[in-house]
Amino acid sequence: MGASEAAADAAAVTRRRLLFVLPELRGGGAPRVLLSLLGELDAARYEVSLLVLGGSGDELSPFIPASVRPLYPRWWMPRGLLGARLATLWYARDQDLLIAGVEMRATFCVHFAARLLRKPAIAWVHIAFEHWVRGFSQRHHRRSRRAYRDIGHVIFVSEGARSSMQRWLGGSHPQWRVIPNLFSERAYERAPTARLSGAAQQLLVRMATRPTVLGIGRLEARKGFDVLLAAAARAIAAGADFDVVLLGEGPLRGKLGAQAQQAGIGSRVFMPGYVSNPLPWLRAATIFALSSRLKGCRPRSSRHWRPARRSSPRTARRDRRRSCRTGGPACWWRWTTRPHWQRPCGPCCSRPPCAGTMSRRADCDWRPLIQHRWSGSGMP
Image (cartoon, rainbow, N blue to C red; front, side, top):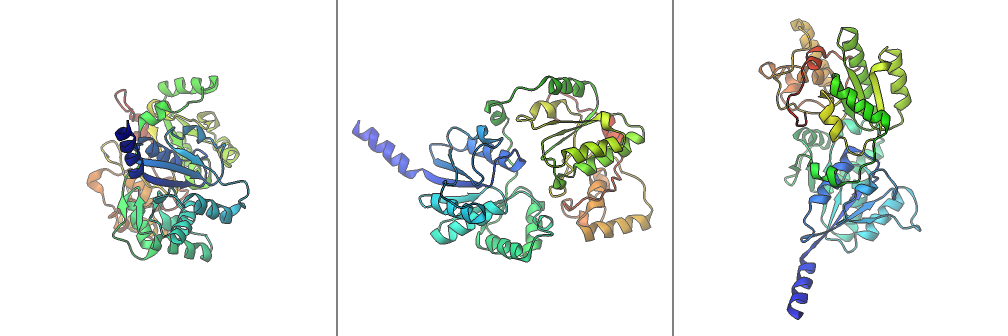
């Protein structure tokens, strides 16, 4: 009995204590990825804690794995960035490694605590950072540069995100790593799922019988759903027949609905709200559209995509110059609608597609996309 207790104590001592930091759990893609990862970590090797700076009660709070200890700021701590820094410093005292799950506030707090406590830290970058920080103050720029230069270990979800940070920071670090997002279907299956309303169930049945373009994300400006609706309106006006479904909640819900009504596609645009498990919706959709202004998606297969239009050499050169200057809006649409034998289409396309702000000119020809239906019973 004594030997077994000693072995258990030794195993407990060797477990590494990890502190993950998130600003909130309001249903975003990055928190979902992090929660999925936490559920896959070996509890015999790691003692995992999750600090949510915004407190409890968010949409994704029930998705925290049972093996993870949730932490929140104490009642006596002030609000704002100062309170978030104090909370991170308070809980990081007995931790072995600090990990910022997303950019901005979580990274600032981890950087602050790691410097004072002299602990190793990791930062996680999910976006094209050089485009994200446009419009922020110089103070914010200096704070971000200091944090990412001091934290040597940075994880990027794509090579495009890494290149964006390298251009903005003016250099790279040998400890930077590119690790694609983890998708775990088991995490969605074992998480508590809210029962769908009757309207949502009817919409799923409709999606199984009609071509549907699906967008998922918070209804805010950076997700680019206004661009998606503008492109859908042009395609429908040209003769395409399909629906658009947007999963998520956000401040632009009313404006997006008004935009759809003004464009004459209000009867084909559906916004069922926040959905805890998007897998049935992805299986029912014909196409998943990533319209984010900050996150690019490099297609793996392009045999079903066609060129948007035939441009004259002069027009093509003008569009390529415009794309390289502005971060690639026109280039993004042309790149994703161009077959692989016609890429790269310009200087800025020799690297992964730009993830900058997309223009309102939706030059994509949607008709061949809507006509194609993914085969098989698996996810598209």
